[in-house]
Length: 127
Image 1 (cartoon, rainbow, N blue to C red):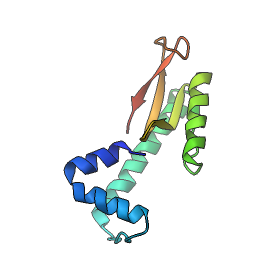
Image 2 (cartoon, rainbow, N blue to C red):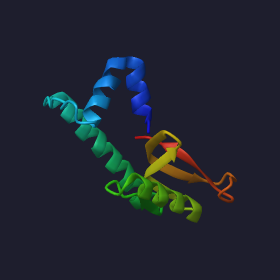
Image 3 (cartoon, helix red, strand yellow):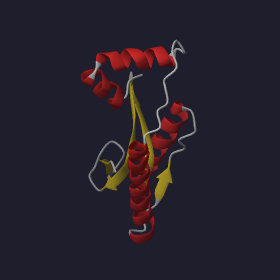
Image 4 (cartoon, helix red, strand yellow):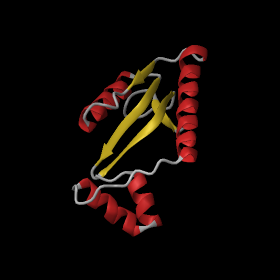
């Protein structure tokens, strides 16, 4: 399976993809370099995401369905599809799969535009 990140890394540097594949088969071990700047950016990004989630729940009073990030990928996809079919206001960490492509959306927000789901559909919001 491929994610959007996989494609971006391939376009940026094909060797990165070769290394990632070798790591996935345990042929090599990826070195861990602690970078305080990267860690700070990750922390700020997660804080921003959580702040947006709180706004949706506490200010906008939206019903949020949270997909289990620790579940198997196929299980997370099933949780996402079920939430979409039920018309959840928001799906947090929506997990998607289409052939070899997979990915997660921070948020899928319900909009009142008809689709195969019913009188609603969803827009992606990436924090």
